[in-house]
Every structure is written in structure tokens, then in C-alpha cells.
Length: 199
Image 1 (spheres, rainbow, N blue to C red):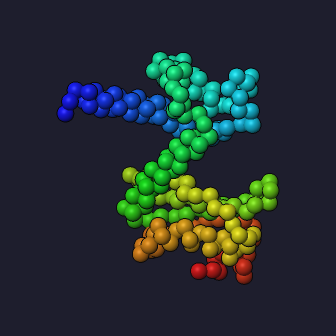
Image 2 (image 1 turned 120 degrees about the horizontal axis):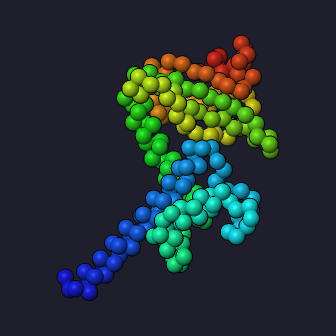
């Protein structure tokens, strides 16, 4: 290899390392939001607004504490990490990694239970959330799995949604599922029309 080619590879690798470092800092900011149940964005998205988006405010704080992060935001023409697209892609990656970890945990656990909550949002859209409950090293844990939009506000729709999510996860080990609980859905508790009557 000639020296020019080696120098090109070195520069490329340095740029990749720098971008990974910046990406890691932005991911840490996003994880901070998740841990503290903060909204990632608000309605006012202007950078120099008095009511800054919370995310940009935390990124600003990190820039004040980290010279390389500040340098990247001031000089980079391509990657800053504050666009909605980048934030959404990072959230998708975090969710993918979290789900893989949950699947590995569920695979080795002897028993699992689920909690399903169902609610209607402000535009009258029915949604459910599935949470897995199990234990890790003797400690009970709850792991969020997914929000799902429901086709209707009835037991059949909720049952179909739940089964479409948990059947692929439990596969041939349905006997692991030892408990189910349903919060927030009055219609599912009826004797003749509730989820417990459906299979």
C-alpha cells in the first residue's frame, strides 16, 4: 500500500471514531429522557428560542462540558444529531437493542407474566401496551414491550393484538406464561365478553 492510501484510511477511521463518539453522547442524552420520562421534543423547535426544546437544552449543556462535542456542532456540515430523523433512528436502534435483551432474558426465565393496559387517546384512537414481568437474579422486573393500535374497542381486538405479540415470543414455551393482568379496560373484565373467555 502506498502512503497516500494509508493516510486516507487513517483519516477515515479517525472520522468514524469521532462520529461514534458524538453519536454516543447524543444517545446518552436520549437515554436520559427515557429514564426520566421527559418529552424528547416540544412544539417550539427553534434553536435560539427562549423556550428551547428540552433535548436541545441538554445537548447544549453537554456541549458546554465537552470540547469535542462543541467543536463538532460548530464545524460539522453533515452530522449534528439534533434532527428529528436522526433522533427517531436512534430511538429505533435503542428499541431494537432493548428488545433483543428482553428476548434473551425471557428465553432463560422459567416463568413470565404479562400486563396489558388499554386506553383511548385524545383523538379517540385505541391503544394497548404490553409489559412483560419476570425476575432477574431473584428480583422482579417489568419490561415495556410495545404500544399497539387496536382495530376496535372490544375484547376480540385486544385479544388478537396480544396474541400476535406474545405467540412469536413464547413460541413453544407457552407454559412459561403463568399470569395475565389487564389494567384500564373495563370491557375485558366481563364474564361473557371478557378476554378470559377467548383463546
